[in-house]
Image 1 (cartoon, rainbow, N blue to C red):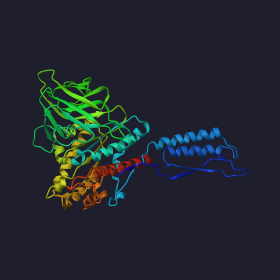
Image 2 (spheres, one colour; image 1 turned 120 degrees about the horizontal axis):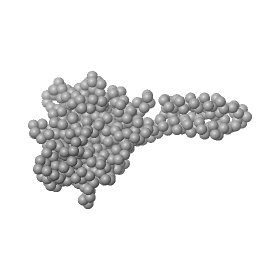
Image 3 (cartoon, rainbow, N blue to C red; image 1 turned 90 degrees about the vertical axis):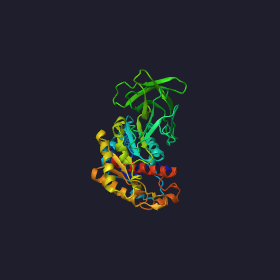
Image 4 (spheres, rainbow, N blue to C red; image 1 turned 90 degrees about the horizontal axis):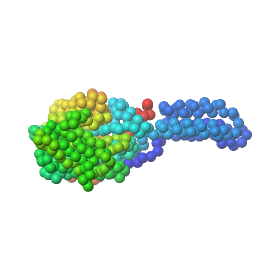
Length: 472
């Protein structure tokens, strides 16, 4: 499935420009038909043109200077507005309810859309989006598709948060690779009784070897270059080693000092001497109090304006496990998020019997924590897609989670993307499997299935964004 970007189907506005095309002594003025939405700056341009036209003598002579000036102003206005809108449409499967693919409660996202518009028209902004999820997000197929789509339209400011999942012994996204020269201990947030702290990545790795080093490599996508020149390390700074950053030839690019006071007590940031896709992070012990490397994640940023689409997912995760993670919600503020997208619920729906009140309180706890540290950041809740129970039974609980999330979003003024309904609702998992979009386990999707969902999500965001632009 591929996305389709095309020219907007704008309502046509007729403008009469007297005598642009002379066709005889008593010819009527010709009409130029311009397919442009008549809102905002376009209304001003149209009005000024009409006013100027009325001052032109009613003759068959052409006034090139005046017309060129008017057209220059008009076209400039049109282009300025056109740069604020985005045209995106993804292909659909017959079982999908395309008419439902929208963000409900999108008015709560105005601050986010305003920043997108500023970036689209002025190209000077940096916008951070964080999608939080479970195994649907850990593999990064869905989120990578949204990342690629939105950065293609609004600019690429970097790869964003990467987590040493491979070092922790779990699956890592295909678009970056983190390795270590030593074996590290680790914890995923799903193991809530393990005392190792959890930060923004949902997974932690730890080593007490002062010779530990990590290689971090970000792979480009077909449309985006993920070379980075700024590295932020999220880690436990108490008694931590310092780190030097080198290229693969051993040339020093920067350093991270655990005792340096920065904006946040759990981060250290280095601006590299030049952009690169591939670095070595080496521990350095500078005094006897330094005895560990406890790492939560890294944030890789590029030099340009645009969007950074961070995605954090942990296999098997539920809302309460993120809420109980020591520093997860607190550390999200360090990326200065402009939007949260919370994509949970699949694992909650696997509990039998399903406990609505417990599920609701756990979701509420996570959201309140995120809002406490990021009070002005809007949220999109995404409902989970339909799935099977034990590979073969239709699961009514997914529908219950869906209803719970939709009601919660409405009551709390959050936006919601209702993937459950869009994807077909109860028993739609049969269709997803039939079309090769769902894996045999009846819960996870194929790469094509995740990419289709990613395109649907971005299409819904674009619809709401364009509506915002058209109304402001």
